[in-house]
Length: 516
Image (cartoon, rainbow, N blue to C red):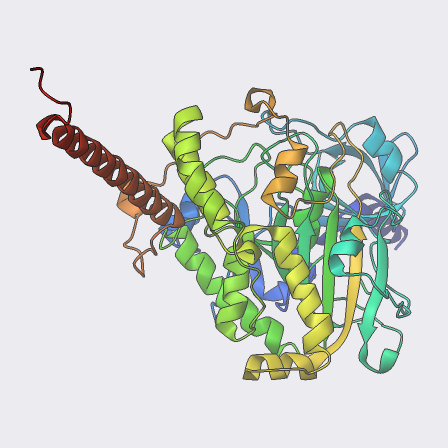
């Protein structure tokens, strides 16, 4: 009997680490039950189609055990640990008391910066949710998410008279080092509880401080339900990103848990810029689920190259806003930057840079701004929610009417940039002129991170579902051609007119008298 008791005690001590850690699939993601999924390698033949497998080789994905309309999501970590990092950053004390040696995921070689002593000092002493794996008794973190990024208590509604969403993002009085949150609106003005709430969240990521091609920021939409403590790290983020080049941070366009989207050591947005969130609390999940179902289909088409990512015409903002508009949310449009500038930039950049640069610039100038700039998209959504939807004004579709009926609160959140060796980021730009004011005047002085191409295998490419629309630069070229033709015609007419005048002058009889 004593031997059995001693054996059980030893086993309990030795096995406590395994019991203390949770599998990542012990938690729900978005509106999906983690128990309905299983972790598989990204090149699993039976799990996802061949086009998606091309992008997820060497990665891990969470795959639904039974399809039932569910879609896979990207999820490399296998374990979740909650606890504290020791002051020296070398140990992690799990809530159960189990202590692990602590290390972070290896840096991708092309990544410009990484976790360093400043990071360790920032996270030590904070309650953390760490996702990763355990190897030889060492907890290797793939993401680090502060547990205080939750809303266990009610948020009082604070009036922001005279301030727009644009103003909130640019507000220098809001902390840059800590998460801040404020309720912008709630039904009947009541305090906002975020425990077990249905959520549709709009995420704006700021400008990077070390890449002059990344001042426009990024945009994504998340769906799901907060947990019983108001924690939202397992919302499911829909992250559209270019597929045809390798990201220096290892980013792959996909559905991904929010803490990995924000805090994965290589690809997490919070490691290289501040972020801003409009969290819409809904009494029913149907509106958010309608968006999620629709965007899942978009991802399927995206991996198959039925449509392609384009920084001007189909980027992270445009894909998402057009999806919402297709569902019936008539988010107002802001118009284009300038048709005249789009026309003028064709000859200018063709002569000073390249024809390819000229085409891209013309597309930027002549694309709807809510589809082009993440910040403009974020602001348009926020202003439409606060001025029209919650007041049930001018609702024109069933989607808008249901959204207006379902909204219970709107919360604005600023997520700080985590300290590391990376330069400090800033709010994103909202216009081309603002962009040009931030970057060096000489393009040769720009900081640019080259991304090697990742060509999609021709044998996997499928025909586009719809005929691609004519790109704006084509109209700019046509306008320049008309202007040039007009100039040539005008010059020709002047030459002919001058020539005829000379001929008439030569043929006319002299008016001078003849000598006697």
